[in-house]
Length: 334
Image 1 (spheres, rainbow, N blue to C red):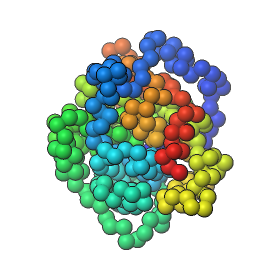
Image 2 (image 1 turned 180 degrees about the vertical axis):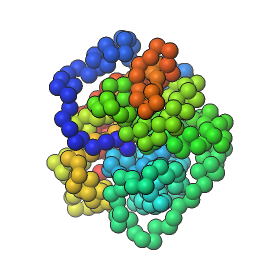
Image 3 (image 1 turned 90 degrees about the vertical axis):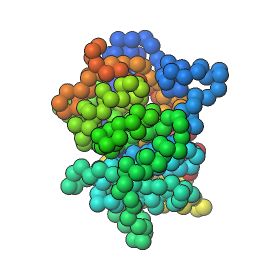
């Protein structure tokens, strides 16, 4: 989950963001997700990278910002390899029940859902009553579910993080060999966060998990889709948006009323929902419109991220083709 827009963007923030990023991180190198340099595989001319067909696990705190819910529907409808959804920042298992309902509406009843880590007493939760009371409690066997996915393939497994890194840290504690199989694409972090007093939302929900996992993940050069790229009004959904309007039309798909109601509740507190997590999903499926650089970063005790020449190497997002992305997303959720 990202964060709602409750303050104005800094003046000039939208003025050539790619060059601003390149100047900030001290490089002129731009990588596209899925290139040879990004994962160490064959060049695109030799065919799609093997990770493009790897099983996918989505880790989400769905039920807060609607961007998670939208991303889950997009994954359900466009990623046949979707093998498991796990929830984080749980709310007594209610997030997992909500995700189960969304997957069923999107025609993916075979995809299991597991209720993951609980982190706080009063998490953001906006979907009470948006799914039937008879949706059962979901399994809490995170380790068993991930073991099953990893055992299904001799190759890598895609882990798409849309919430805190708590579940990934728990897996590392219990079965590090499972984490070693994962190609991680994570929404979270910020080198130049708009509130310098704190870390980006997903990082600050569990700073210890981020601090533990970043060095572990360096071996595979994890991909981070950071807040500077995702916190952009060009990716907002609000009532005037084409996606929202299609959700209101007669004959709209069965998930549309749920997503619309979720967004309406969210907008009682925030002006819109920026699609942080769907952009992260797009990066994980190697959609070429998200741009990256290799960078070394470090975390302070609050999990605030800085560029550091002695830090951990990651693939860091620096920009996206927002107009094309919104078209990509609309085709998957309407």
